[in-house]
Length: 203
Image (cartoon, one colour):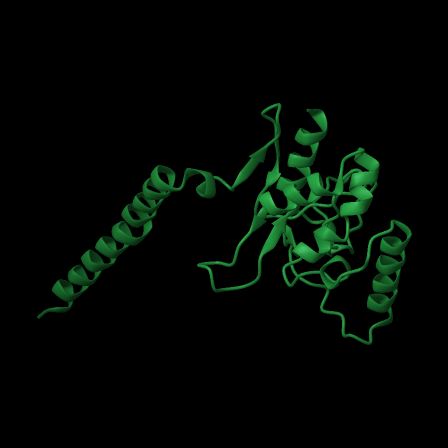
């Protein structure tokens, strides 16, 4: 075969592969996802009782008032910052950045942060659990353990004027089981739990 025919064949193969992988495959995948899994495909967005989007079931967020269950601490800050507030040296202020701090266990900054977290939890009347003190690997974990949720039951019942049994029922209803029944541990989605808490208090 001549060089021209070989080159022509190579170009045709490249174009066919490009059409298959860059156009047909992505659009077929999008169509299947939007048809079968529209909630997950669009970010697993959660709405409140007023129909407003308040977050994603996949990304944790901070709850700082005593009327809500607290989430895991995070090294990522997804809040908006003004030009004056933004610190160019703080990559955690950049939306979309996730990951742990990578501090060694002996790092004084990590120890200081942990001690402060433990102290704040104790002052709030919450028994410190590992997931209420340590960040997750991605720092985006939307779940806490059932033990961490139970540790906050008495405080929420007192603040919300509800019975502990009502709070525990909400925890059970918003606990996700193990993946496929065998992988991982049960976890409580904090955003869903706090929305359920608002709905219960409103009734």
